[in-house]
Length: 137
Image: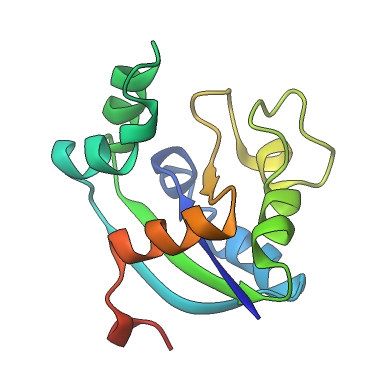
């Protein structure tokens, strides 16, 4: 059993497709162990995406992530990190395979509907960023 973090980003929340995205996870063997809707502060977004601080898109990413509420989830299942990344599709929705979350719900490489941990180690850190142990069931 593996855990990973998923964020439904402001663009997908604004489109009211939270349930459709959650259904993709559940229909493909991932279980929701924790979930909450929240508004990120500038400090939250900066801290969470600190690994991208030196990249030219960092400021725009922070601005986008605070533009509206997000839904943060802990997903569990066999090979959860890889499964979630497969379900999300390529970062650029124009390159994402048909039927993936980004192909179906994302507008652009910037407004790409979802975030998912890229490794088990990052998943652990990202989950701890958003959730206390007692919030995960």
